[in-house]
Length: 148
Image 1 (tube, rainbow, N blue to C red):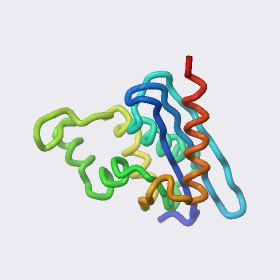
Image 2 (tube, one colour; image 1 turned 180 degrees about the vertical axis):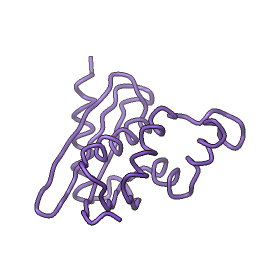
Image 3 (cartoon, one colour; image 1 turned 120 degrees about the vertical axis):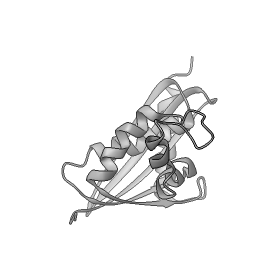
Image 4 (tube, one colour; image 1 turned 180 degrees about the horizontal axis):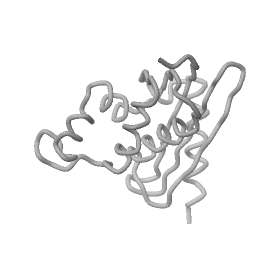
């Protein structure tokens, strides 16, 4: 499939949940490294985690082989354990019939996961991993912009 290999690291942060939030991502392709980030005045941590993944994948101009490293069990487990595909099949309902959260963002992410060959890697957050720490700093700096 995709020849171009890209590493992506993502993180989301929120002050209060919900509250002001931010996300950060680092993309690495060969010698090149790009940082990106953004935030929202009122959001949740999981929405910021998902947004980081979406925004990073949107930057890729052609199908790529992606190793995506995140400290979000919500994001990695939802995809790798197939939960999100079940929610989608059930009209964005979980197996217990309750609405699946963040369906708007999952609907943006799923086509990107089809376009790219994405392997999710979960790491423990705040454990000194260089790129996870960079993403966390980017995300925190973004939510801090919304502090009153």
